[in-house]
Length: 205
Image 1 (cartoon, rainbow, N blue to C red):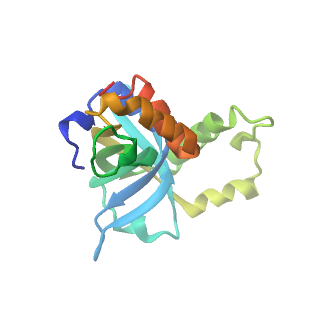
Image 2: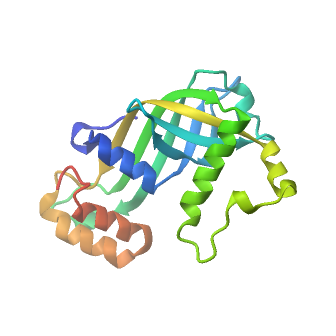
């Protein structure tokens, strides 16, 4: 993606942490007639050799996976908070803009074996169930329920590059107090942008 230098976040640890906290991504690849995109939860894991991979699965009924060969290039998009920023919050006249955080992970796609898929599913469910009041476990589910696994196709994406855009009103630091105040007043996603502007994740802060 196009990232002006003052919005670019090249901190590898920060990019990985962002994906871990915002794991619902979009898998994008070339299709036979047009680009293909699927919204999926993706789990980022470090490999023994220090590299990182993304793990996920397609519904078998989704034709996206049928158009992905072994080693095919893919891009996974992870979005964070975003909000409109009115130029009425600036001291000087300027056009309005939009603040946002986004990370792109590029890599190569590989289909998982059934055993690898099951291991990934156990790991993902255990991770997201740990904060549940009454957590479920795939280990305790019946064979009938687990047969649903036949309806998905597991994959691993060997990540080759990460790039992040932290567009948080860099270059307008004098206006930050007013921008943050207005974003917090709007609440919801806008408040999350305000928090990011006040935090260490903002390269311009």
